[in-house]
Length: 152
Image 1: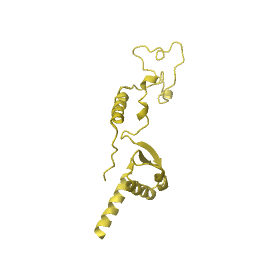
Image 2: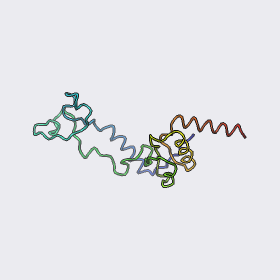
Image 3: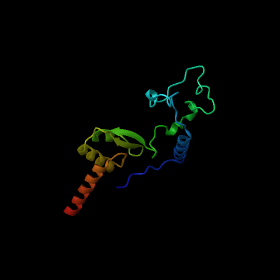
Image 4: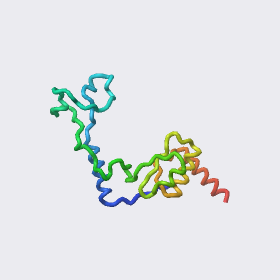
């Protein structure tokens, strides 16, 4: 099944491309000594405080510190790469509050197969872009479509 495409305005399209380029240039921000100690290996960025810290002093050859200049353009910050605003949906009623032209839906992970099928059906009727329909849902919808066609 084809997914609805959002016609993006030219400035937004340009900013999405720019965001992608900036993401490629952004370094991995690592905590000081995370390469040395296993206990802090995956703890994420912590701000440096020591007066002798090489990362804080931005020495050549040391990891880059987090700085405001690495932010993405404000107009596209938080958008899905397709240009839609992602919205988490848990039931069919939540679709009524959304706009198919600006929102893409992501079905919550705790939603079961039966309700997921209902959400995907209704979302496609309304013209939403469903980010995670799931393989089993697609198979169920195809099977349902085939039985409807052979029954006629």
